Each structure stands twice: as structure tokens, then as C-alpha cells.
Image (cartoon, rainbow, N blue to C red):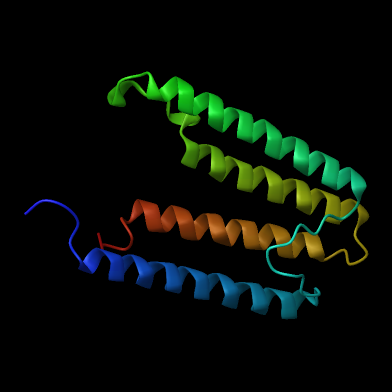
Length: 142
């Protein structure tokens, strides 16, 4: 009667697998189309030292905002929370800003000038996927 139904976990795994497959397929198609080399997974591929410094500054600022936002919102009533200090909004903003800075640095300093197009297209595709999943309530699965 109360709690989470067992089928919810299966649905969640299904959505994560579909989301991951769509993202991987889109990335490989765009990479071939733009002739951009594949980078290592889960690594920080900074274009240069300036990019690394800017990226880590952005990360530290967002970590501070996440900690500060958690302390502020935990003391407030659930209905009175400040929405832009919620951690999921801040992580979404961190991803957008970090990838936008990466695209700018690739546009200015990278050897392959099409790399920034790949980064921006992947960012926009990911945003469209996440927003559509959240707005449609996981395409009606939940």
C-alpha cells in the first residue's frame, strides 16, 4: 500500500539504459559526421591550462553554492525552499556552464575547429533529453 513498487526499479533502469544509448549513439554519429577524435571517458580533457583553471574555478564556486544552498534550504519549510539553491538545479547549471566554457575554449584554441560544434550539439541534445524526460514524467512511465 505504501512505499515504492518493485517495478519502479526496473522502469528506472530501463529509462537510464535508453537515455545512455541515445546519448552514445548521438555522440558517435556526430563524431563521425564532424570528424572529431574520440576522447577518453570520464577524464578531464582540458584544451589548455587556462581552460583547466577556469573549469576548476567554476566547479569550486558551484560546490560552495551547493553546500550553502543545502544549509539554507534545510532550515526552511519544504514549501518555502529557494528553488535555484536546490542541488539538482545547481548541477544542471554546472553542466551547462562547464560544457559552454569547453566549447568556447575549443573554438578559440583547439586544433580541430569542429570540436566545439560537437561539444555544443552534445550539450543541446543532452539538455533536450533531460528536459523532455522530466517534463513528460519519464514518458509516462512514473
